[in-house]
Image (cartoon, rainbow, N blue to C red; front, side, top):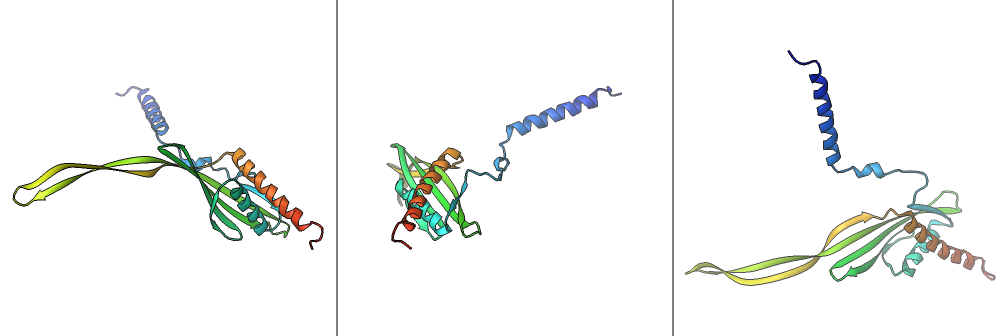
Length: 185
């Protein structure tokens, strides 16, 4: 006859082992996605989507970013950094500007990624084959160094995006002031 507490202890043991197993697995990153109304990745500005994207382009150019692709309402740009002789970092921006439908303002959506690269060494050796003797391995060694991506992450810092949006706003205000300057219609 089974002890009456055995099924309860088996259930407890099974629950404990499942809980421990769940703790050992990697967390699903989609749980971090909030899709909230106030996002660090977007900001509304007065002006057309073309004017807002132009302000973003100027903000990136003003900080040394290279614009790799640009249309009236989208843009990609990147900038490289080398924090150490064997490390390379790159920040890439993707900007999309969309009209808010009221003819007076547009929203700028921005996402930036930071990619890290490291040197990968690969050794190679040569083998020499002679038909009479067979294959002979010779110590001809060569080393090829190449940069490989070792990390990639979307930048989530609201402070980072606030600084970018502030720079874009300064360029947008210059455009607004230029359009309303005396003698302009």
